Image (cartoon, rainbow, N blue to C red; front, side, top):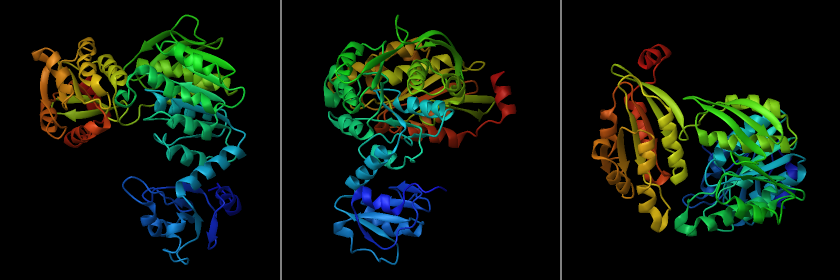
Length: 478
């Protein structure tokens, strides 16, 4: 494995005090559960755990060095491994991230948005990788520690860097984008998410627009022309960006959808990307992903990468677990299709997931079943926003609704009785009813905010029914 940081550059970036001899650094870690030999371990103090409690474990796992604060410098045996001592470990990680940003000549793309930032980041990673070494955030590392960690992990020879930025409060994206310093900044969309903290969608838009504060000179803003907040975002972007590029179905969009064919496992798209006609397949299903793919390809072209290669690469996209991944499971008499949307939820992503459920055809005598948990952090509008999903549930031809949580009661009561499965206050109380209800041919979609704990329902279904082999799957589909 190649060296990510020399000992000298590593120490100089943080202006740290060294104890012991530092071995070659091939990676950066803040979690001993995933630490690999050669990683530098940063003992970050979090809400629940203090990384200093795991320094010994890090050395046992092969860490090349541990970064600790002054208060813990004397707590470890120097014979166990080398230390770099700094006043604050998280600040040290930020400093290392800034050093990584300073040493690279890569084209850097920053992404935020109420919905779709992680999927767009993954699509950009795949698309840009066809044109050169590409570095991107792992998972959803988009917060105050995830962004500097991703920066610190960026190799010096990176050609394209993709960074996701999230927020729960005003000012958070501003702090992150000043570290990332993107040449291209994408806002996928603005929706009523975190209303509990912001109050209005307009204030959410203003917080997302903070991404432009870190734009490099000559930077480009990529905005959703179909979103009601487009003009508000554009007004802010014009104060920072040299150019604004729009994407969507709207007339005059710079990256414009011309035609789309939606399929259960993919989408086939005709688009005009900044004057270039492109036909491509997007490997994961869902119309909302098609819209974001326009922003992805626009960014690819703006970054100087090969647009044709990028378009071909998008066929390799797959929906990740918790974000639309589909699994065929064997049940008595055939199979069912499980759509795992359990990672998180808000009104926009819930509508998109219901649309995906509608798009997925049940088997013979099968039904569309939705298992929905509370959407959280919606403030005083929570009941109304949950109740408003009755229309999308109807439009998706949902045959049976299972609902979880106090807010979802509003939706459950709003649908016809013939479509009600069961409502429960917690997902644990709902598991047995969902598992025993399924029959051959059903399509079931599970979605809710992380706090509503819908993931265990997905795991219970996987535990109850084995993954179908190809022979079983074909028979079930017939």
